Image (cartoon, rainbow, N blue to C red):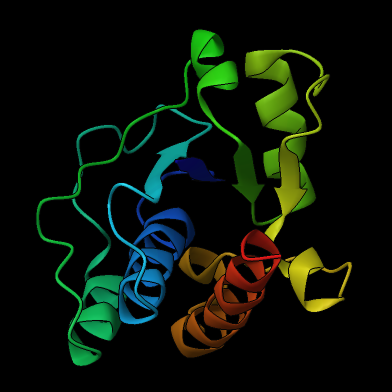
Length: 151
């Protein structure tokens, strides 16, 4: 089984989007829960317990994806070794993961956009209000991540 954790600042926009999109894409390609386990978490405590942000929830629902049970949680120091991949959305996320979990000695932490051949970041739609671009970039990253996992 491959274990993947998506991480962003609050765990209400980008990381749940990644979690649910990758789960949906993998399922449509024949992956089962025995093949891949996907979760998401925050680096901050600001949104702990909150639902997915409504515009993100609506975007996912518009694509037939139900995320209504998701509640924001924070990554814990002791869970680093539980994951094969820890996927971040921007460099601040990477720094915060290192602050919480320590150095990335297992080489598990990657920017999602790096799987598309782009070294850039996926902007936080909480600030940009551009939820569609975030969705599109997250979807592309998830598609490419899944290709890497099948090699």
